[in-house]
Image (cartoon, rainbow, N blue to C red):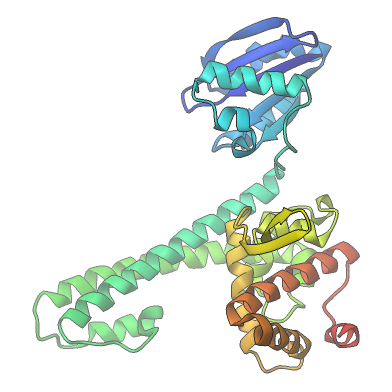
Length: 345
């Protein structure tokens, strides 16, 4: 068996390969290209090759390439490899060597999950959509701020539709500089909206082809974006042994400090998938404000927690509960049933 550590960089990477006894079999720099990696590593595969690589922007395609040629790949979180993260002598060679040695000695932390290409493409679509929404919001805020400076206040959420922008273009502005600004930003808003609509159509197709999204959407206030965000972040729910593990992955689990017989719980860890955490906290807020029958058991539970711990803490707790329910729906291949929650309460 051969063991390989690769420190990946944009243009060139460094690899370090040893055998089972720790004897160096190859080391050196090579271009970060598929052909270079394939040529350098292919001869070690017949004897068995394990590779350790840090998670980063290029991890996905490198992982797929190494698996394709027959290697066993461990993708590791660099923040959890303390020897690398805290080393004062940090070079590509040292990092690759440490990865290799820790892999050989079975000293690496639990490997990072690498989703399949379909899930990665869904993540890409959702990231692009979030960026477009953010850019469109900034356009609205810039125009709103400039108009406010000239004494013109717009109603809340006024600039969220093309019709509203058209009405704004029909206004006779007192200050001559405002019209060209509004016209320019109106065109930008229209372009961003068309791009957003195109991505939404693509996401709608992904939604229709995945019955897991339909299961999640039986939950109150869970729509296309929330369900697809869950699926993109979690990938295969069966890789989590419990809902507690999933909550920890979302970063919504509280931090814990335990010493002797004393245990203290702090704020949420914020480790894991940020987008999953953000979207499902928003779902929790919507559920807490709802008045429907399907959300009644959840709102009753939320009110009890809010009374003792405060509203902010209760929202986070409700988001954890919703993620737990989503986990069970996919794990048991069932749908949301408010009656079951009432009986459990």
